[in-house]
Amino acid sequence: MAGLDESTPVPTEIKLHQKSRVVEITFADGKRFELPYELLRVFSPSAEMAGHGPGQEVLQVGKKDIDITQIDPVGSYAVPPIQLCIRLLVPAGSYLLQLPEFRRMLAPFDANLLGYPWRHADPRVDALQQALQALAAQGEQERWARSEIFERIWRSAHGALDLPPPPLDRADLGEPIAHLSEPWYCCAEPTDQQLQSF
Image (cartoon, rainbow, N blue to C red):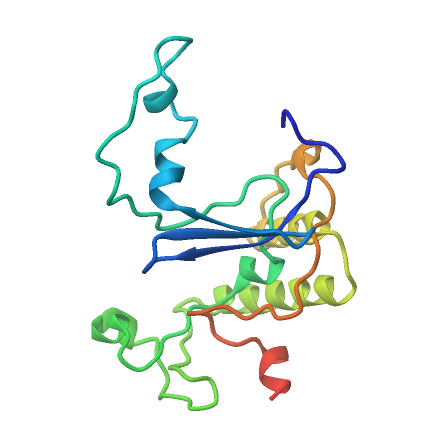
């Protein structure tokens, strides 16, 4: 990517703050920035904004109520590998509890889990998720590069389907990203490792 080199600070954490409508980005050098959704939308490099050539730029107005619902990582990113295989936490009061087809997958409420354990209709899906979660945890514990963890998850997921994994383009993966000490995420079931730490 143009303008980036070995001295460019690497993001270690990216958070969406829905109530304040701000994206918070923390970098390995300790700097932290909060960028309003509106600013990110108005200054995005999209064709709508920049046009298709010099002189075609369009001033954006009316973007105050923009929402960011998801951030998709590309290349070297600040998302810990455990997020690649977390399970959805279904707490008391969840809208999912109103869906009859989902309720069939639920076990009784588990106070230790803070939610309803659930199982996929196809037990192979749960087995794969558990295997991938163990693989991600092993990679974090042994401090594998995140690109290596992702590549192993990629191969395992394709192997579970008896498919050859397509090659990954390693040219854009960049340097390993710093590891965070607390991989705990809202709306995700705690991992076995996290439950054992209580």
